[in-house]
Length: 439
Image 1: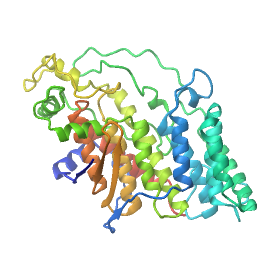
Image 2: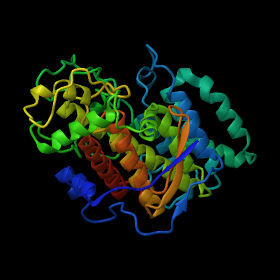
Image 3: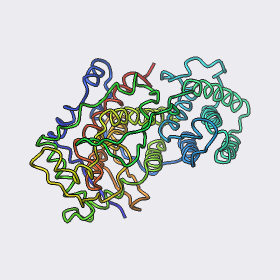
Image 4: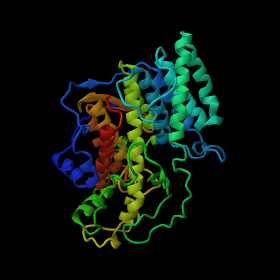
């Protein structure tokens, strides 16, 4: 079953997004390439052909998304699809660019291994393989045979050997750069809030993310969002009432189509984002371009996640179910408490503001707009949560839909999604200005 949506982004919503940009975000956009797309020709992303970058993206995803272990490397004990995929993709990018040239490397600025005559495919394979071997040494069953099989398809022994040597060296450099990234830092016990507006739970998912060293950003707080809306404000009441009416488990105003949209975007990010972003790495572009796009998508995804959760745990804003259940405590005459209200879909276990789905979707959209030179990028996403496929006529369309989906699901308020979008876009703009640039 396939659904199609169109871009419904309004000028009002654009202005609201601008109001939540931190001053640092604005200064980062001053001068140079700000990552904004021109009016290029429309692009259609069709079902593509697998290549080394897309194959090892899938192998890495399958390796990363295994249950955490009680012992082993920090990654084996606390794997993270965004951080670990970014590491794999940087290694593939640096290895391929060392041969192809044209762009600045990310970490491996001057590999000693010969590049002349080296196979780009072998270099990318080895870079991904040796990163996975360093991060996940006990999960070889997922990637060893796949690596051996892929490498055997390169028949030029000299080119293969040079590529492997280069890829292994680059992987070592990248792994060293990401060592002790902060994910394993000890944290004090979390104390749930009790004041109106304070996060009460459930859970503290992603609480360590603000401690993770960003890839391109200077700090996790570089693009911290502005504070959430005041509980006594009219805008806050509008947010609460919208989510109460459309996102409740017993909503009489949410349509079947809106319910499907909410379910679609409730698939775990660990699988939905890697599978669907992989589509963009399977076009007819060169391996170097595919490697650059993959690294851009995952570095911005990782840094948008870090930035988003830094803001989340800085503000510790309550979720809609708390806000609606306890609306009699918010000092706002325009909201009404409903102690029996529950969200349509399960609420993620981390603070509400800003919305992570807004952060990462806007980060990806900004990368795609810049990479293709247009917002008119037509593509499909699919979801195992709804068993449906949805079509998007532009990069904005996906971001707009996610805003609505999280409201229909009862997990978020509109302002948190718009703030997240602005933050994610700032992360991408900064990365595009400062990394992956042409020489």
